[in-house]
Length: 184
Length: 105
Image 1 (tube, each protein chain N blue to C red):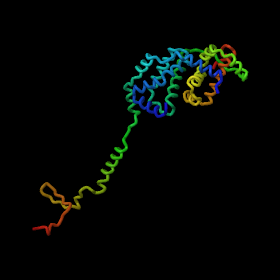
Image 2 (cartoon, rainbow over the protein chains, first blue to last red):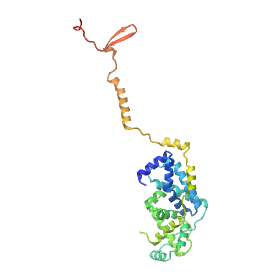
Image 3 (tube, chains in turn blue, brown):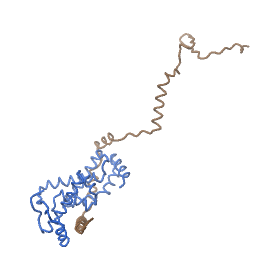
């Protein structure tokens, strides 16, 4: 959505225009629920997260100042809600450092042995701080800069998390099992 | 540049989320819980911009300036410099007097 339309939409939302809110749901609803699902790996929780996100968006639209895009603002709210939900689950994510010193050889090994099922499983087991970056980057197609805006982090941090998340998946595939060496 | 691993990752995410979508029921639930209430209306009012049409604003300012300038321009009636004829409780202020001599019959 271009800036003009977005400004117009935000203006109408601030006036409590329900047609604009429905338009907002049409624009971002489906995409957002898929993203939440990929992070939470639970359809019901994803629905709850999306519901809570849009309610918060509507209630706090007066605080949105157009300095970032509406899209990144909505996603930052959604990710905060997903993190809270994961915290409430009280799961412990056994994970650790990806294997240092594994260079091109690992890359080749992984490429030869990509097991889609294992990759799928490892993706959902990944700690949320890496998973959210991977989902926003690969699934949402956001740039590093946009991810930084959504997460409120510097581009360098996002790059580092992205690289680390990928490396953790790769090393898990090579090991054919769990993330190792402590917790993140 | 994305390699095979990246492509696979994206493909898995697309596949996994394919069956997830926003249902009509969820949509209605969200809309139902997002109706603007009294507090929302008040906040809308407090956060709204007041739009004033420029020509109207200029007109109002011009009128205000004129109203304030009239006494300074001394347009009002100055009783000291004019002749006042008092007739009982009334006053006749003579602003201009013309000599009528020559027009008399």
